Length: 113
Length: 111
Image 1 (tube, each protein chain N blue to C red):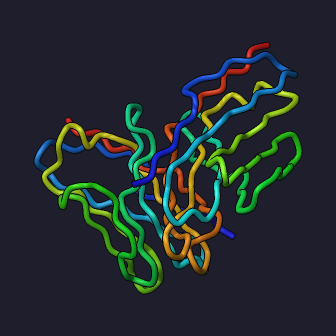
Image 2: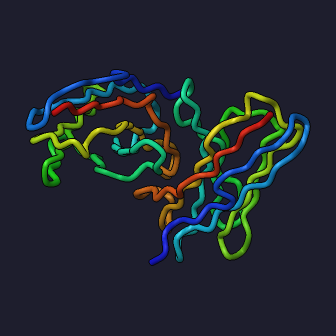
């Protein structure tokens, strides 16, 4: 089975721009979660999608949004980028109910300048 | 809300044993997971405890005490490749589909 694929791997954006990150989960997995990882804050939960519906949401501003498609692929979008949004964004997929082991992608390293 | 506490850093020599403790506060607890992350890599799943007791997987073992809201990861016969960050994470929520991570413990293995 192919693992979780995230694109792009690296991204440099300017303050005020917006960005879209993509995640393809493991085949058959319907739950996709997004995390932000920074040295100071660790792994922070952004949101989780299951069957095209946002099921859980973390404590991030509305600039952070996401969606899931019928093939379980997910995208997250960050609008009006701020310097503090520079981070590693990780996507994880889980099996049927989403309450099993989470498999992480390699992440997208976003740098905002 | 949920909170997890684990030490920030541990240093040990090859062949030694390291125990990483994790205490948590959460509602609707489902289980405690452990993940390993090497620098520049993705977190990878190590173990999951839903019930009290010890789970052993090769050189790594994980323990859970739900009454104490406490768990630990035991790394035995440390090898240089075990140098990494280790995260505990709690599964919670109505369907156990929410996962919150601790801040991570950086393990440095010295020769």
